[in-house]
Image 1 (cartoon, rainbow, N blue to C red):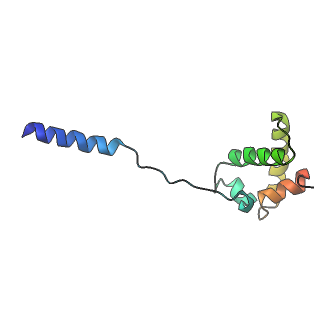
Image 2: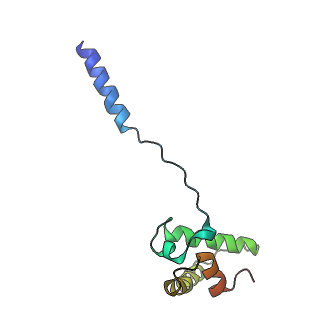
Image 3: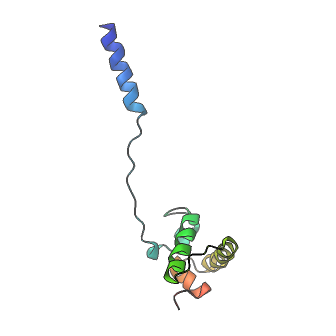
Length: 101
């Protein structure tokens, strides 16, 4: 009887240790506003920066990453977004950096 109780207790403890599966989340980047971006409402802002960098470089068939340029562009877009919080981040990138022209 004690062995059964011990086994049941151990099983319950093991089940509680297993983390619950997390739901997968998808994000439509074209709908992220500057407000969402600054407040990390959708995801971490660094993820958005890296995604946008890859997206626009991919559209231009550019496979080179220049970390200094990424940082400078991020600062420009951040400044623009700070003053235009209702704008989408993709539109901010287009307006500030001239991408998609």
